[in-house]
Image 1 (cartoon, helix red, strand yellow):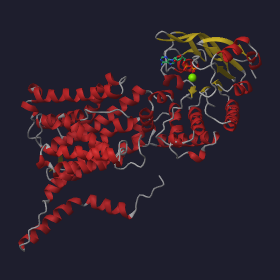
Image 2 (image 1 turned 60 degrees about the horizontal axis):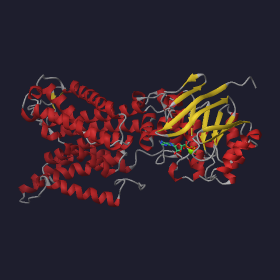
Image 3 (image 1 turned 180 degrees about the horizontal axis):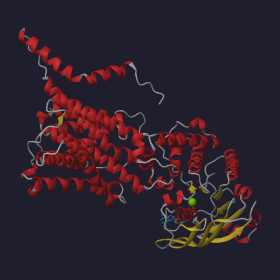
Image 4 (image 1 turned 45 degrees about the vertical axis):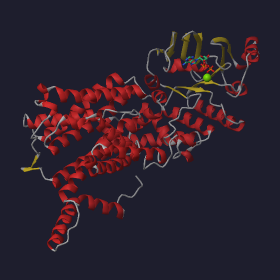
Length: 328
Length: 261
Ligand SMILES: Nc1ncnc2c1ncn2[C@@H]1O[C@H](COP(=O)(O)OP(=O)(O)O)[C@@H](O)[C@H]1O
Ligand SMILES: [Mg+2]
C-alpha cells in the first residue's frame, strides 16, 4: 500500500490509545489533588471513563462484524444481536456453570456463533431484500425467547447467568477496568485486521460483487451460496466474540440485553458512519456507543435522540458520515 | 486450421414465460474459432437465448452442449468456470466499484484464495493477488482503458462501460464469449474500434457469439449468422446468403425495426 503509516497524527493516536488508562487515572489524580486544595472539578472518575470506552470499543467490534453482511454483501440483517447472544451465553454458561477457562471459551464462542450464522443462512440463501431481513429478525427473536423462557437450559429465570468469573492471565484475574480496556483493544485490533484483509481480497471482492449485482456476480463465476454463507459465518463469529467478551465484562448477564433494539442500535452505528467501510463502522460505533452511555439517564428517551440524529444523517449524508460519494 | 469442432451446440431450445414463448425450438451450432452472430428484431428472443445458455434462465425444453458437455441445469457460476463468459445488453457492471475491481472480479473463477489464505495473507495468496492485478491491468490495456482504472465504473461513458464489461469477461479466461449488443449506444467511430477489438479477441483463440442490431457490423465481421424472429429461427448461413434471404428481409422490413434500442 502506498499510503504512509507513520505520520505524526497516527503516532500520536497510537500512543494515546496505548496509554489511555494512564490518562484516565491521571485525571483522577489531578481531580484528587485539586480537591485537597478546595477546588472541585466536575470530572467523571477514571473507572467510569474507561468503562464507557470499553463499552464503545465493544460496539466497534460488533459494528465491524455486522457490517460484513449489510455493508459488504448488501443483505439487510435485522437480527445481529442473536449472535451476540450466542457468544454471551456460550461463554457465560461454560464459565459460570462448568468453570471453563475464558481462553478456551472465546474461540469456542466464535465457532458456535459461526455455526448459528450458517444455520440461519441456509434457508435464507435464496431470499433477498425484505424477506431476508424478516428471517434475520425472526431468528434473533427466537433465540431471545429461548434464553428468556427456557429455564432448564439457562438455569435461571429471564436468562440470568450470574457470577461469571473473570479470565485469568498469568495468574492474574482480569477484573479491573484498565485490564478490560487492553483486553477489548486487542480483540478490536484483531477484528480490524481480519475484516480489512477480507475486504481487500478475493473474498471481499466477491461480497462486493454480490452487493452490487447478484446476477452479474454469479455470471462471473461467484458461487452465491458459498460466499453468502461465508459472510454470515464470519459476521456471526465476530458477534459471538463480542458476546463472550461482554459476558465476562458484565459478570452477570440476562436476556434483556439481547432484545431486538440492540440489533437496530448496532445497525444504526454502521449506517451512521457509512455502510461498507471499516472506518465508518468504527466512527459510528464510537459516537453512538459513547452517546448511549452518556444519555443512559434519559432511559428510553435517548432513542428519540438517536432517531433524530439518524434522520438528519439520512437527510444530509445519506451514505453515512464518512462517505465521499453520494448514493442514489 | 485443423478441422472445425463445434464448441456450442444448442438443440431444440425452447423457453416459455407463462403463456409467452420467447424462444421456440431453436438449433444453433457454433464452431470453434468462429465469430457467429445472432440477429433478429426486438423481442425476437435473442437475450433469452443467451440467458438459457449461461444458466441465468433454465430452458423449458432442449439441450445446450458446451464442448460436448451438457450444461442445462448447471448454475451460472459453474458455466462461467468451464469457460463461458458474457456481457449484458443493459450493462451490468458493479457500478460503485472501480474499473480495476470490476475486472479483478472477472478473475474470480480463475483464482482460489478463500477464507484462511485471505486472512493470513500467506505467500500463495499474495502471489495470486499480484497475478490477478497484473492480469486485470493487461485486460484493461487490451481494451484501451488502463487510464480509467481507478474511476468508479458507473461514472464512465456508455461506450467505455461496454469495454469494461468486455475486459471483465475476458479476465474470466473464456473459451466462448457471448456479447449481447455490444455496439448499442456507440457512435460509428466507437463501433469501428469495437470491430477491431472483436477481431483482436478472436486472435486469442476465443470463439465469439454476438447479438447485434447493427447490420453493417454483423455482415462485416461474422463468419456465420443466425436470424431469429418471434422466437423462431428463420434463417442461418454465411452473411451474404442471409442478407439475400427473402424471409430475413421480410422479418426486418415487416416488423417495426428500431435500430437504436
Ligand atoms: N423474464 C421474462 N418474463 C417474461 N417475459 C420475458 C422475460 N424475458 C423476456 N421476455 C419476453 O420474451 C421475449 C423475448 O425477449 P428478449 O429475449 O429480451 O428479446 P431480444 O433480446 O431478442 O430483444 C419478449 O417478448 C419479452 O417480453
Ligand atoms: Mg435483447
